[in-house]
Image (cartoon, rainbow, N blue to C red; front, side):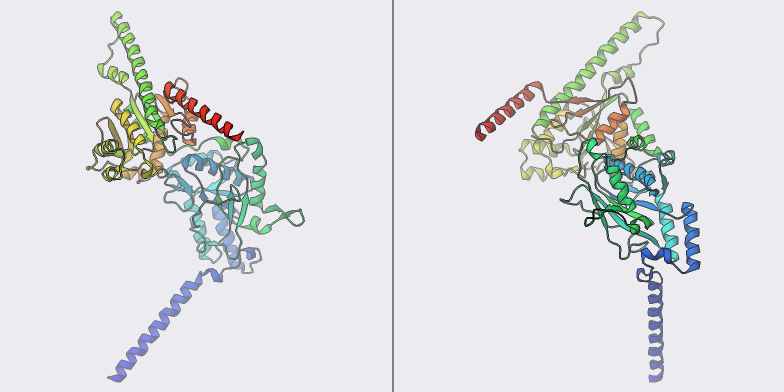
Length: 515
């Protein structure tokens, strides 16, 4: 019996040791500690692996592969795509292939949830192939995996482009590093370019970024121009990008990337159901003072009422002409009503879904902490917290929906326990289409504003904020003669005059104190 027990223990020990050895060998087969240093690939003496590497690169790149991988691009979609265009056109200037980044949550970057075509049309990259070559993220990942399988993973160095030395944006980790990319022992490289809105002062930035990607820099000790062959020889430049303005000289880089066919089709469908409608972009974040918002709401409502009155007059004139012409077809009553009451489609950072009674209680109780506990809402903006909503925000929106019919979009159907105002209607976007992505919804809103009968926005610095989001809508509307590009709603004249007098008085008092 003891002999049998001893035999069992011996067999168990053999199995454990064997499994441990197997796991160790499996783990170390592709362990980064066994990889060639990334700077030694040119001296690889394993002829068989050199040939395998050549064949893999030939398959994906037609020759040696050299990529720019946008790991991280700061700012949200409207500006982020502008930054990506800079990187794409720069890739062509340094003889590299741009990897089309993933997208999600209004961001662009290699490690996000959805592929490039979830937001954009890949046709843009195909149409610009005279300026740069591109590869999809799925093909790039496949290249990485095939190279990893032969123990010669793609070599890479982290390249950071910053606004200035004072502080860096928080950057995510590179999801390909240490597993599919060989970055062993390589230092990160950083380029600092002072940001300026003056295009003339940014003229040399294109050459600065180009030299950075080519590994060219000025030696601080000697002052001589030096070529760092390590950077230039890396197969993948993993780029972390934090800029504000464009730097590429090619005018083709200025054109926005067309959005995906799926989003455009959804926008066309909704626009046809809403027409005629006026789109209003009202970004309430950081409007100072917030009390301006209520007065701005009054001006917005007055503007739309004037539009309604103008349409009524034109419709009455059309009816008179119709009555005088016995052969003319009658104007349909439903069409007449539509012309008299255009829909207001609202693009705003104020919550699109909220409970009317909760808003009323916050207003009635002067925004007490107790009243806010009963406020039910779903934030519409990741950058504007609902905690920053003031009574003025609620009162301004309440004034709008008490006087106008308002339409907004939302991901999915609103919760049944939230009771919306009668004049506030939600256009639900199916989850299987937008995948609960707020960036997808933001693009849809933008496309609907481009298709609107008219377009309005809060006057910058008074009722709203300037934004690249608004500018992109304006640029598209410029291409369609016969519609307004943009109009602004401002403070009522009496309040604007009062604020100007207060500013002048404050400036005068400050000047007196300095004497």
